[in-house]
Image 1 (cartoon, rainbow, N blue to C red):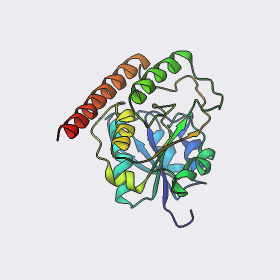
Image 2: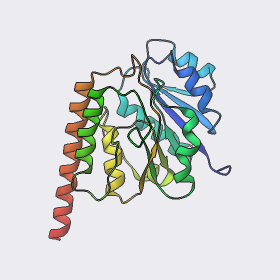
Image 3: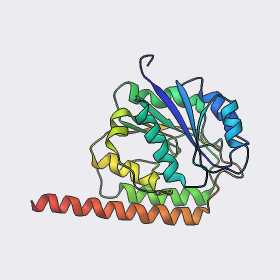
Length: 235
């Protein structure tokens, strides 16, 4: 682990209330913390820098997908071995990073997803559980590689995955684009139990619109994968 370059990246939008604490705590477990600041109108940028993060600012709101793309691009540019991505609103506990990335360090996985449904209690609202359950079912159905939480924002990636993926989605659809592409390319996905704390302001996007957007993108990706397999069999 001491020989690896491990970076935590935090996509952020109007997160002044929580970003400083997250950056400070995450710095104890990684080589560098990068904050992708997506056009915040509050003090997110200033507080993140004061806490010791490298801040990359989009200048205006470009969407969650573009923030994740920036995380990947910066990690590849800096030849990072492991990239950890956390939410900026305090849902995730940076102190779980060491156990979270262990499957990557041990070579047991290429991508780690933090599951909120593997025995760790949380205060997730019921409507979110329902929506996540639907998306996760759509991700799993018909596939040998299944997960319990297809929508978790707490994730970690190996250098192999970072180098292999080319991301397209600009919005929340990127959250399903990544695991679908990781699975298609034959990389190993492993889940690790995480704690998750929901509070008022945990999401800046309408959960219904977010769910519909993610579901549409997932259906499109699954259909594309099915067509690819059918064409491969025909050949």
